[in-house]
Length: 386
View 1 (cartoon, rainbow, N blue to C red):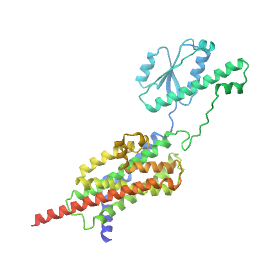
View 2: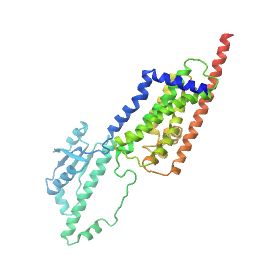
View 3: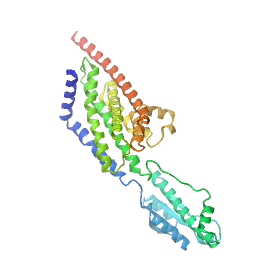
View 4: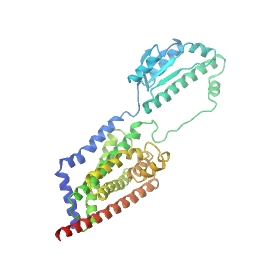
């Protein structure tokens, strides 16, 4: 037990006497929290600048232009004369979409002939392109419904009958968990936790790598050596999550529907398994620089591989298999069920089991390699003395 306390005190002394460690622990995660939280603070893309070419100059074409301009998503910044102007403005990042209203649009509508309004969308940004297409289609759908209703009224058909004829099958959509599709509610928590995951990997890598580079025998108890270091960084990391859940979620107005205690328990398992994964790398490589390269190799794509933004089942088998060995994948899936879906504990247990399995696996591999390195150092010492 005295050795365990010695390991903890030694690690704390190293942390508080190193400017690099103090910055890494005390400032870096919170700077990232503020920075990433600020990016998606407004949640939805609004007032995207667009351009309109009105070749018809009719009442209907002016109505179309006005509907686009009053939409939350669009702001008609330009009224142009030529389609080629769309391309130049899009290339210069001045507009996200162009709306082309051809000549004789109103005349064709009155004659019950097809009229086509074209969209020219900048597809280089998936989010703005998708929103432009969906919201543009919604606007035209609303205008179409209004025009059909007006035409049917002129034929003596009542409003209710007209609505039934236009919409024989009606849709009633209930949006659960994130009804406004708020981008900040969806993406910001995942990015925050991804950053913490990278930090935990660095903790594990640096603390073991520093010891191994001395080429000295670690101790007679590798178990207590690992446990002591793990306790120090686990306590520090739990504080991060407490601050994240109780301060940053409310500060950035991100609703937390689930049980905070349940989230902390799952978070502790995530912390331990990720720190142990970080410890495993220098234990295997024996070199802090190589271990940091491995840390970067795992940490950088971890968020993309986690299944948080792209379903794991839609990935190639190789990618989805690799993802299962990264603690962030199981944690984010379980965390989403807590913080957004407010699920009961039985829905989180499978992800807790995965994290427990991973932390046991990483602990055993780290323990075995450190024991081997201890024996190697001991034998080399005997040869030198001999």
